Length: 117
Image 1 (tube, one colour):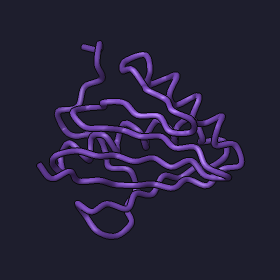
Image 2: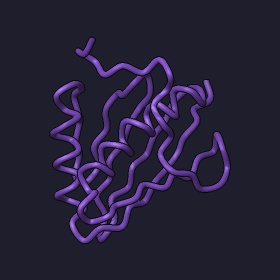
Image 3: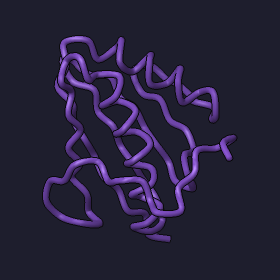
Image 4: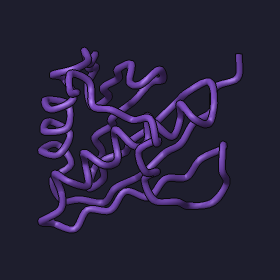
């Protein structure tokens, strides 16, 4: 099965801090596996990766179809942008599903937060 992927490299002087905050928050709903600077979890039917680098936090979304890929991008991107709002962090995705650079996709029309009515 072909996997689609998208990547966002977010420049920040504190990538470790944002990774920890993102993993902690999303860890309330999913289990992350961490090896060194690389963390991975199943998210919204796809896979999310968070990679800490020198001055950069890289988000990677992988999924079997474009709709699921957009959901994984939405989950990772919107949370990081919210946490980094004070420092004006912006998540810009480069995807093999839709070539070119794009902001985090909006929530799908049928999107509901888990555990909410």
